[in-house]
Image 1 (tube, rainbow, N blue to C red):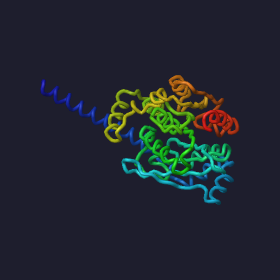
Image 2 (image 1 turned 180 degrees about the horizontal axis):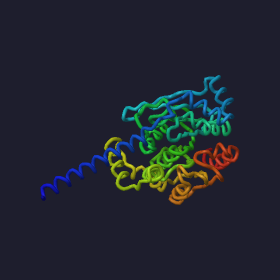
Image 3 (image 1 turned 90 degrees about the vertical axis):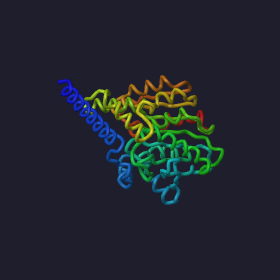
Image 4 (image 1 turned 45 degrees about the vertical axis):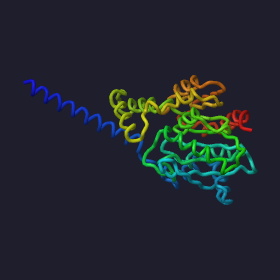
Length: 315
């Protein structure tokens, strides 16, 4: 009888382990390797021209004068990374590194490139994150490994724009989380400030929210096992991938932007990261705005807010 109970218990345990492993692998594949619109460059350009018609004359002019350039770097793990860059209309130290969101690419954040390059006359450097655009990679890294890649782009910028540059790093959505994750690291002195637009507090918080919203499941046990497998596969886990903990270490100025109607990255998250950030800091909550559409719905006000903030720090 005891042997039979033990056998049944082992079978149940193995079934549970198999179910959790299978569920965790499915979750990782679902979240880190989804259908990726960021690889569709033509579709991305068409989408941006339709949704941000002000971009067309700017992009056309850059392309006509061969002023929208490509550059590549190789990360320490051998992944080849791509970015677009463009110079200001006249020699300038003022430079923006612009970081795109989840399943997007550099093209799909050209509206912020337009803001800095056309409206504010900055040099701009717009990377494709891993698994996006023309960059290599087999899955998204949710900002955590991307922070190292963005820092490598920051280190590369003087070779493109000159040694005396001054810089803002600006990200949207996952790019905003990446920006906050970057902000907690040791950075060159020429990085003057940051703008984060609708970034999440941590990968753990964001995945917990998605797990409950999409599947009606609590974090335990699936999120724990998925995080453990992510550590084995990618070298990082959901708990450590925290914009909240990184921004708490940031002493440079940051502007926080978030829509008050954002239900993808819930608005409560911006209040949490803002509270964790030491001064100097500013916050702008955009009225009636869902996820990542603050610039689209308030382009003039967005530009003025960013200009007023960056003018204090980027000389």
